[in-house]
Length: 165
Image (cartoon, rainbow, N blue to C red; front, side):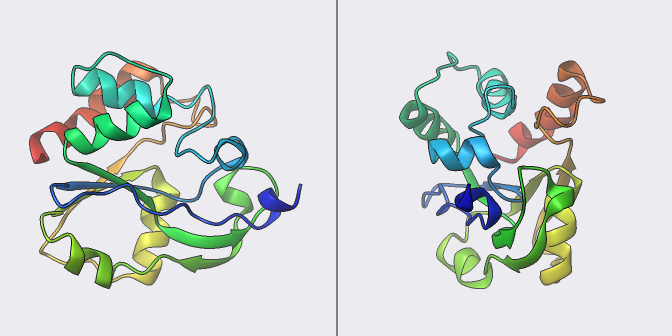
C-alpha cells in the first residue's frame, strides 16, 4: 500500500493550555489507515493516558483527543515524513523532521517533552538542539513491538508525565 511506504505525520493535537508534548516517531500502518494517533489495537498509549489521568477508557477517537487536551497534553511526532515499509521504526529512511521552533513559540506553556520510545527521542535529538528550557522524558514505547516491557512497567515509567501538567 502506497501510504505506508511514504507516511506523513498527522497535524499535532494541541491547545493553548497544553504543557506536555508527547512525541512519537511516525504513525504506523494501522494509525495511517484509521487516521488516528496510536491507532493499532494493541498499542497501549490510550489505555495508559486514561489510567494515569483517571478517565473512563473509550475507543472513540474524538473523546480520546478531548481527554488528552483536557489534561493539558499535546501529541505529535518527531518526524514529518519518511519512507518506510510497514510500521517498525527500524525501517525508517529518508526522514524529514517536524519543525518545532514555530510550534514552541505558538505554545509557550509546553515545557516538557515526553518521547514515546527511544527512536522518537533519537530523531528529535538528531534534528534539534536540546534546550535547558525543557524537561525531556524518554519513556518506553507503547507499541506492541515493545513486548519486552510489560504493561505495569510502561505505566510506572509513563506516570512521570502527570507531575508536569
